[in-house]
Length: 171
Image: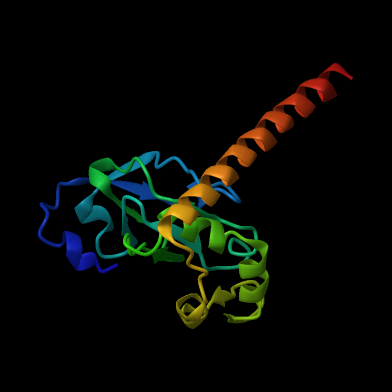
């Protein structure tokens, strides 16, 4: 996405700000807890909007699965780390959740590790890898069905985690 989408907004416009620390590992949702003025973030940070998918591109955040779906943004606009790739769904082809689940998949991450550049502890995923990645695209209805099933299973997993934690405390 181009920042020019918001260039004509007043500089005092409130927007969400999402630093890398607020993006979760292997969780579709994150809280956009900070709000800043557009003038504070426009020139130095990465722009995104409601329903965009954020992908951390820097080591070790990428390998750890830091990514998420932007929802609940102030004025539906967000800015964040310059170390994000922003992926926007073409709504007639793909659901944003489908993109998220694809990029958070271990095969995407493992394959991506081979496409990192830089030295030592400061490696980055290449833009070419993300752009050229072959995204499986079933029909939108099938995507929605699969996403619903994943969400139901994730809910069960989270309930089991809480259940285990409760019994560990009792033991």
